[in-house]
Amino acid sequence: MPAGTRLTVHEGDLRITTPGTVVDGVEVRGIVRVEASNVTIRRSVVSGRPADSSVGLVMMIGDARNLTIEDSELYSKDRSPHVRGVIGQGLTMTRVDVHSVTDQLMLTGGDVLVQDSWLHDNLHWEKDANFGGGPTHDDNVQIAAGSNIRLLRNVLEDTHNAAIMVTQDRGAVRDLQLVGNRIGGGGCSVNLAEKSVGPLSGLVLADNVFDRTQVHRGCAIIADAGTIPLLQLRGNRWADGAATSVTLRGS
Image 1 (cartoon, rainbow, N blue to C red):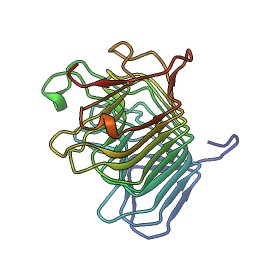
Image 2 (image 1 turned 30 degrees about the horizontal axis):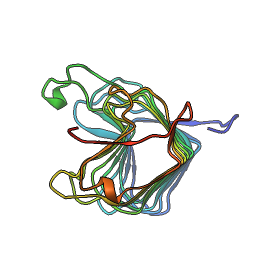
Image 3 (image 1 turned 45 degrees about the vertical axis):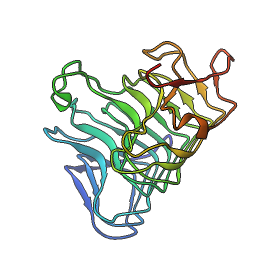
Image 4 (image 1 turned 120 degrees about the vertical axis):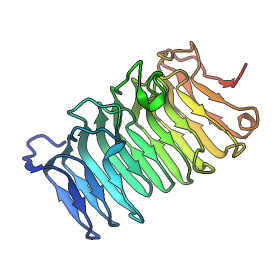
């Protein structure tokens, strides 16, 4: 948020249905439902509301694409295991501070650019009804499907499950680039799961710096046997300068 920005308060949820809408300098005390394409949210704050079912502070609905969020802050003022930051696909986030949610970013598809942003301070419960009474699976970025996904020069930290969790729950994940990020937290910080979809291809992990804050000591990146030979790795290191390696799942 640029210093000196004056915000106009919008009480309650904000529904956007007109293509090309620009939301500038607004504090939304609710959630934002983006139901149109080419929407821009800039120099704004979205602080949410109480929730008893799954929502995102910013939710892309239907065929909405080309959402831009920049120079903004997204956080849940009401602690809840049901609230994520942004849910959708076909979006760009630049200089966005997302915190105090379970997952900062839930990608349901591709064509995504997240750059120069800070995803941190995830909410976590040891007994979370969403996970059968077990602990919350909180991630900075969860990727269910998609291609052409770029995560560049971000700070990702404070998660319990993973900083970047590729699930392939909705389909294949391809052409994913993680470049120049500062990454920490999670059981393992980058978790690349094949599941029933098969190996992930076209993944580039370059020049990322990992903090040694994982639950599983020394586990910067974990992947399945079919994926590891396909990874393009260069310049990834721990914050103390040592080179990172990839952990084989199940080893």
